Length: 558
Image 1 (cartoon, rainbow, N blue to C red):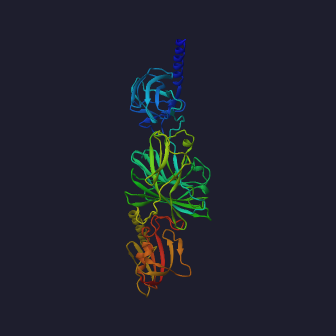
Image 2: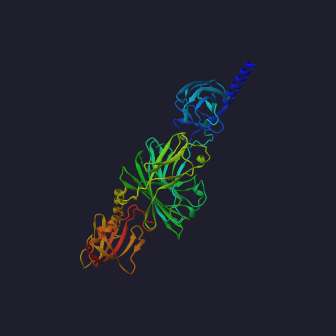
Image 3: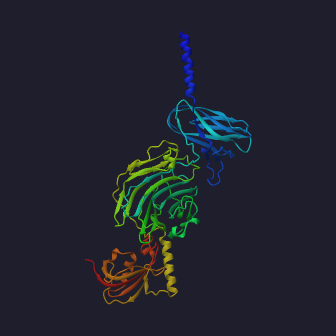
C-alpha cells in the first residue's frame, strides 16, 4: 500500500510539472527589429502574414524583445524554415546557442535552449547568421517561450513596432487668454535616437520641437494644422481651410504635410546636441473678428547664444488663444522601436493677454492608444531635478499610469527674451540695408543721412533744443511698413509722452537728430525695431519700419 501511495505521488508530481511547463508565450516574427535597422520607407523584412522574410544580409542581426514579469526558467524555441539551410547563433540572457535550420520549405519548431531568468525586466533575443547555404537566411514565424509560470512574459503581439508615444498635458482653463507658451527640453546622451520627435510646445492647432531625422541630420520642427477634416492629402483642402505661411527665418524650409491631418510645415536643419538645454517659445495673435490666429515659433540654441525665428503661419477658422498645451516624446518610425528614448521638459511658462507670466508646475501623464491598450508597456514619466521627464521603449515595465498627476517645484522667475540679437541678425541687417539703399538709389525715398543703420529725413526743421536720448519726449507719430506702406500705429488728436530710452533702438538713435518743433522720418531696419518678433498682422517678423515723428516737447531727465 505504501508503494502504491508513493507511485501515485510520483505520477502526480510528474503530471504537475508537465502541466506547469505548458505555459507558452509566442513572440510573433513580424515584431522583430533588424540591426542595423532597415530603411523605413523600403523595408520588406517583416510582414504580418509570414513574420521575418527576405533576411539575406549576413551582417544584419535580428532582435526580438519582451518584458520578463515572473523570474524563473524558460525553454526557448523558434518556428522557422530555411529553403537552403542555415546555422544561427542565438544570444539570450548571457547564453549563446547554435541552432541548425535544415533545408525545408515548411515551418518547423526548433529548440534553441533553456535559460534562467534571475530578475524581471527587458529580455532580448538576438539572432545572427553563422552560415547560410542560400541567399535567404531564414524565415522566422515566431519565437516560443515555455515556462512554468503563467504570464511570465509581456509580449507585443501587434504589427506596430513603435514604442508608445507619451505626453505631458499642462492644465489651463478655457478662460485663459494665453498668447505665449515657453518650454525647455534636454535630451540625455544616448537617448537622442534616430526617428524620434521631442516636442516641447504643443497646442490645439500645432506643435513645435526637435527631431533626429537621420544619422547626419537633425531638425527644429514647427507645424500648424489646416481647418477641416482632410487627413491625408492637402490637395483636397479648400483654400478657405488652408494654413498660410506668412514668414520664415533664414534657411528655414517650408512646405505642406499630410497623412496625419494636413497643414503647413516648417523646419530648420540644426545639429542640436544631447545634454544641452534648448528653449522654445510659440506665440498666438488671434483676430476674433476674422476668426484667424497667427502662430509664430522661436528657438534658442545655447551654442549660438541667440534666438532663431522659425516661422509664422496664419490659421483660418480659428481666432483663439493658445489652448490644450502639451509636450510629447514620439518614436515616429518603428524600425528601432525597441530602443530607449528619454527627454526632460522643464521651466514651463505661459504669457497671458495682459502680458502677465504664469509658471506651469503641474502636468498630467498621457499616452497614445498603443500605451492605453497595453500593446506596449515600456513607457513612463516623472519628475527629477525640478523637471518633468518622459521615456518610452527599451522593454522596461511602466513606472506610471495613464492620467497620473505630476508636480515640479516652481522656479519663480520667468524667462527673459532678447529677440533683437538673434541667429539671423547679421544677415538680416545686410538684407534690410540693401533694401533701403535700393529704394534710395531708385528715387523712391529721400534721406538726409543715417546713424548706425537708421536712415532719416528731416521733413521740418525744429527751432527748439536738440533731443537727448535720456529725455522724455512728447510726440505725434505715424508708423508704417516699409514693404507696402501699411500704417500699423499712430497717435490720435493728442500727442503721447514716454521716456525715449525705453523705446525701440531705432527711435533712440534717430529721434535725437530732430530738434523740438521739428518733424523727422525714420527708416528703421528690423534689427533696431522688433527683429524676429511677429506682432500679428500689423508687424511681421523682420519688418523694416517707417516712422514720421513730430517732436512737441523734450523734457530732460531729473
